[in-house]
Amino acid sequence: MKTINDYVEETGEIGYVKRVVNVIVHAHGLPSVRPGEIVIFENGDLGKVMSLGTEIVEIMILSKKSIKVGEKVARTGNSIEIPVGRQLLGQVIDPFGTPLDNNTIMKRPKISRPIEVLPSGIITRRTIKKQLDTGVGVVDLMVPIGRGQRQLVLGDRKTGKTNFLLQTIVSASRAGNICIYAAIGKKKIDIKKVQEYFINNNVMGNVVITASSPQDSPGVIFNTPYSAMTIAEYFRDQGLDTLVILDDLSTHAKFHRELSLLANKFPGRNSYPGDMFYVHAKLLERAGNFAVNDKEVAITCMPVVESSEGDIAGHIQTNAMGMTDGHIYFDSNLFSEGRRPAINPFLSVTRVGKQTQSSSKRSINRELLSFLTLYEKLRNFSHFGAELTESVRVTLQSGEKILGIFDQDPNIIIPSNIQTIFLTLIWSGNVKETDMKKLNRYRERLAALYTDNRSYREYVDKIVFSAKSFNDLLSIVQANLRQLFPSFQ
Ligand code: ATP
Ligand code: MG
Image (tube, rainbow, N blue to C red):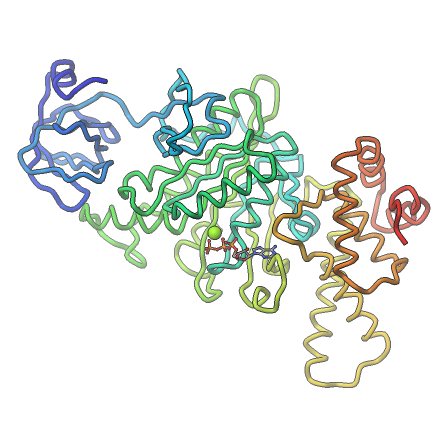
């Protein structure tokens, strides 16, 4: 480990701290320092150069210890880098790559990469063609997500956003993706819960958690999503598809605002600094579907943004919508009605996901949307206490059944093809059972069969893929009821 004196000798420059404002330090005497460069203080702590004035350098402290006026400071010549390698898999690390779990001994990877890089150019990008199964039925059928898509997850506090993302990670990891979960300023207990979820579902070997908590300095919290992206880019360059979850960007924006206000940057809308859009867009642009050595490799990114009281028109929310390829909206009204997951398919958008679906699934998507729109209209109408005709009653009953099969427990992952044939079974009217709990338990058994039994899986995949439309699929399923739905009474 080099000390400040080594660096002074190396660079020939020594600076002194002139002023300290909370986590921002003004220093003078470092004439050739660059923005973004890491500097080292006398007590061994690190800082990052934020901006340069004619006389002074503005530095953000990257630790919790206090820095005093008059202390020495030196350049290191490096920007923030983190070690990357397969050793990170299964680990919980801080944004600088140090394991947070004291009991684990990790062999430190030999390669390091800077955490802030420019996004890859347009020449390296390819059209998004493959679907990423989230394992959550309502999303896979109605708001499909493509590999390489940037999909925002939007909603009020405690509406099930994180839980949905954990299900997505389990599903994506089973499909061979490397998943990186960035916990941005999350409580330690929440990070532990996330880790336990992955361990219980046997996917921790494909997952890296980069985490910062409220006790960390704002500089550390601010760097969490960048470090997650750098890890994803490393695995992409190894030819592996990755999924990055940024939980959440609202917290990230708040810390950026705090740092900017301390640094006397002029505040704009809602006191957020003027470069707020740029900061997030530069981060999310690092996702996409890329050409790597004649192969297409995707970095799918799902950032979370919190809304308050259902207001999705705020500054950060609209910014994030503008820089992603769609959003999944978690509705607190649906949550209080008892719907789990509380995803509102009418207010959710996917701009590139539909092109990744097979034609039968696309046709299901259209049918579902028009049927559920009709159902919603009739349901609102029936609230007035109007007398209902038989056909309206039948539509309402079927609507409830369809919505019922979108209900899913927090630990259950349903592959999208199972959800598809199960929906077809319900739609066809072959099922007399009205107890949704029983039906959903049967669906879980089908999902387990699909995951464990390869020949059943290939059979189901072939049927869903070969059908040209929903009607086509309905008749194929009708002709194969016995084989598709074993032990179903
Ligand atoms: P926060 O604002 O704290 O980030 P969040 O929107 O991420 O909240 P979660 O923490 O995922 O929400 O979930 C909130 C609560 O809802 C949790 O207690 C969770 O167990 C419950 N929950 C989430 N999804 C489901 C589900 N599919 N079925 C049953 N309960 C669920
Ligand atoms: Mg959450």
